[in-house]
Length: 115
Image 1 (cartoon, rainbow, N blue to C red):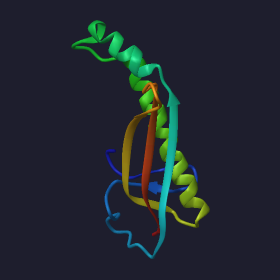
Image 2 (cartoon, rainbow, N blue to C red; image 1 turned 180 degrees about the vertical axis):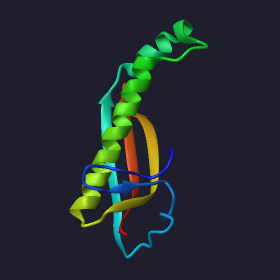
Image 3 (tube, one colour; image 1 turned 90 degrees about the horizontal axis):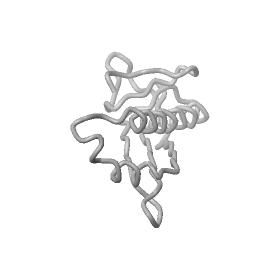
């Protein structure tokens, strides 16, 4: 993240513990957003690794970016529901799940605040 950004509700999201020049007035608790992507993505990725060694896979990068953005949007929506206008200390995690490792979970968590 290059810096804090806002969604349509005006909820700012940042990985930093505070936003410079904007004192936190109230802490509203931890908020999360999770997205699970059904992905033969990883099986396909590793099966085709020979084809992309040294290169990048744009289609996989788009899937990951979309999942990350959806998780952040859920985080922002939960913050707005609690009356907050920012989420600080955001952490993004990626986890392969499922019996066969065929799904990817992207989770975003942080602290909802009123600035």
